[in-house]
Structure formats: structure tokens, C-alpha cells
Length: 124
Image 1 (cartoon, rainbow, N blue to C red):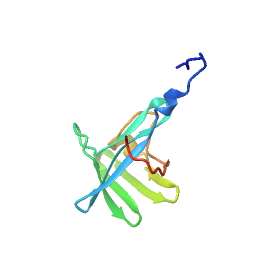
Image 2: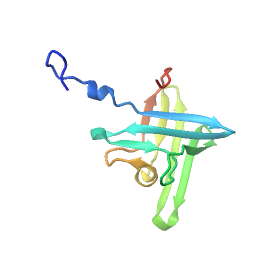
Image 3: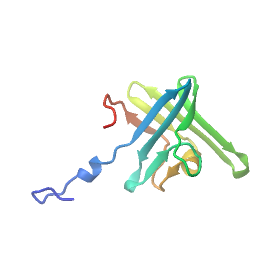
């Protein structure tokens, strides 16, 4: 992309915004979101149900919101954790099983060791 004066534009990078929407409904927690990885690959966070885009159900464990799914016959042990601190939201998927097997993630995207900065703005 070029600016009006012919110089290189960085607008394409401004369009890359990762987000996580966390909400509570009937005493249950849910999340959905999109995480940008390298080379414009993304990771879509939704419930791992084929053909749907339902929000991901979470359980409150201590100070973390957690999704766990085990499928021993395929050697899958997904543990997806969300934890807030003073800087924002920390996202963990230590063994990459959620990124590789549960969520729709491009080859250069994952949900391990991601930190999203707090914002006071909502979605437009």
C-alpha cells in the first residue's frame, strides 16, 4: 500500500487487531475471539463444534477462566486459560493442543503466551 505522496504505508498493519470477548450468561462464562499471528495467519476462538460458531464455555478456577478438553484416543489434552492482571489479559495454551486441535488456527498463529493490553473502548 502506498500513501498519497507515494511513500510506503503501514495501514495494512493497523487493520490487525486481536480481540477476546468474555461474557457471563446465566452464571456461566463464555468467550470468543480472534488472535492474529505471523504472516497474517489467525486463530479463531470458538467452541470446538464442527459447523458452528458458538462461544467457548469457560469454568472459573481460582483467578483463571479455563476451558479443558481431553481426547485420550487421539492423545489430545487441551487446556486454555485466561487470566487478568494489571496490564490486561494473559492467554495460555502451554502444550499448543488447543491451537492445534480445538480452535481454527493458521500455521503461524497460536493462543499460547499471548498478552492483550487493557482497553476502555468497546467494539465499533
